[in-house]
Amino acid sequence: MKKLQSILLVAITTLVLVSCGKTTLDKTYEGPYYNISHPNSWKVEENQSLTTISGDGVGIMIESVPNEQIKANDIAEIKTYSDQLLKELGGNQDFDLSTEEKEINGQKGVWLSAKSRKEKKGGFMFITAVDKAVLMVGVGAEVEGQEKLDLVKMAIESFKITKPDYFTKKEPEKKGAETTPKTEETKFGQPFVAGKITIIPLEGWTPKYEELIGTITFTNASNRIFTMMVLDRPGMKKGDYTKSLREGFKQSTDLKIKESAEKIGEIEYDRIDFLTTDGRTAMTDLVGEKNNIMIVVMMQDGLSDDIQKMLETIKTN
Image 1 (cartoon, rainbow, N blue to C red):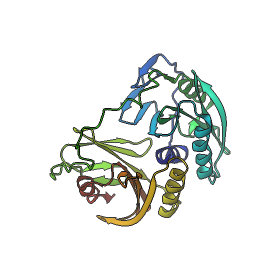
Image 2 (image 1 turned 90 degrees about the vertical axis):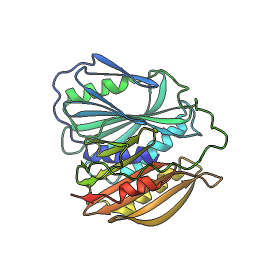
Image 3 (image 1 turned 120 degrees about the vertical axis):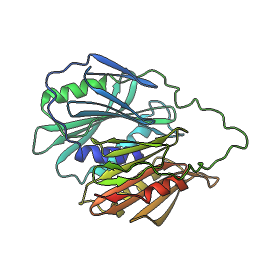
């Protein structure tokens, strides 16, 4: 739920899309567990849990959020996600937001619509589920003109699950394997500029910046990953964003929540650790704010030393 809120909160209010002209869905992207059709000229950017298909200023996002309890087509549980999202976004005075139950290619889910009250703009998001994962497919609410809205709607409605058991197949854990992330060599690479911040990754880590959604994804050769969102949103306070993450996550998981404050480099963060019943850190979120820039960091398995060293280098531009 935390990723759903984070991505859609940015997409619905900040994604700016420009004219794409008359285009058809003449190519199909075959993802790891799904297919989706899109215009041939659009580019696919793949990440571990988030794929963006974009062109002519339009960006369709396909996002997965692991959830051990959810089942395929569990419409009641899916609605808790969409209802919480509407609650969090309800204060936006620029858009009318609504949801309806919908089935797309055998997948039951909730169709979220956003329509501008002032201009001819809108956006869509389809929220569905397979066993052990919530899935979101959609765009932000800045698609302008009926022709573009129709194109985006057709693309989303072409989404089809091809491997429904994808998230239930996991490699067995090796006996005695370490449960905490390994620390990489602390040798820094080149400064990386992403919007209004600069960060210096360690060598071996590769950052990728998705400007449309203000997200940096860091990966390394060991398939470790963490995500950072950079939000230029002076109207939102750090505490409000932290609360939205905490309250949203409480409704979608039985993980325990531990909150604290932490200063890393120049930035004071609200820290949220999500703990399993045996006390292991399943994930950690950091929410920081400096010079009207909101920085949200999301890490599986907690905050490791190497990630902390990279966060210490953040400067606002």
